[in-house]
Image (cartoon, rainbow, N blue to C red; front, top):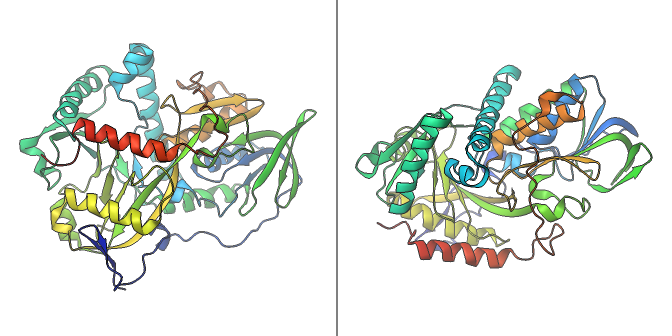
Length: 445
């Protein structure tokens, strides 16, 4: 199949249609049936069958409790099968910013919690034998400005000396050993980070949960959750289920049906493209160590080799509100051309989008509100963080002290006038682009 050509800001209409399902679904298609039937009673009901929901379900089931998981679409339809598949230590805020906000002791605890999430997810994949192309090849973060590069030096010093994390500053003169471009001012390598195939990871986790007796019901949106004496009444599209405990693991798809949670979680779309196959040699020439790649601009490009090493997969904030996918493909391909001019005539086969769950604290939110347990707010770093938080949330439900986390007690402020439908996102798009313009972060040295 000939790829859709996106070059120089123009989309050719003479080529094949753009595929608008995630590239990852080629290898791991989503389910299309609505079985099994939900049970009328369960010890625990979980809303959301992504990484967090399935991880929580697995932990609860292995403790001997009955579990039913509800998903509005196919299991894993959301971010769990749409992300870039980058596995990191799970924090939007830098260590330096964490110290400024929470003090040195708690900042160190938060960083270590993030590292624990990475280790947990790596161990989960190995222990359960999930074939998800997981590898710790490291992550390179490109500095879009001289100021960002200087901040990276301070971050590296803090992480190496106080947090014991293996990071390495790469100056501009040495940058081409990591990425074949001159648009960044240097960068930072996180050696312990890695990548995987997100949809295959979800598919494997789903199979493990079902093997342990978890009932996962796709195409069964939850309509309401109401307290009924000592239990909960979960009304869904196929009836009613009574549960002793309810867990919300809806992340970027948290809606007004969860009124105590929705105002604090903003689902922001991120857009992604996959290029046509360009060959492993060409990909390695662009990314010599085949690392995961991110940058410091507010529009936040993140890109990587595909697991087979044949393509480049790139994501970013083409907009912070829904836009047509061909338009998103134009924008992202234009930005990719800015990083790798040699790809100017390379076609794009896939473009898709999915929601990232953001909080005003820039930190995850785990605990219990209005009686409903929740693990929400990955802030763009959910591949390692959400399976870990799902596990920790389950331990809390089971009454185990091992469910304690450094995130406990960090509750984000509600977004005024927000009930799950973020009407303000177009204004945020303009604001973040203005930030890049003001900082001079335009990917041109």
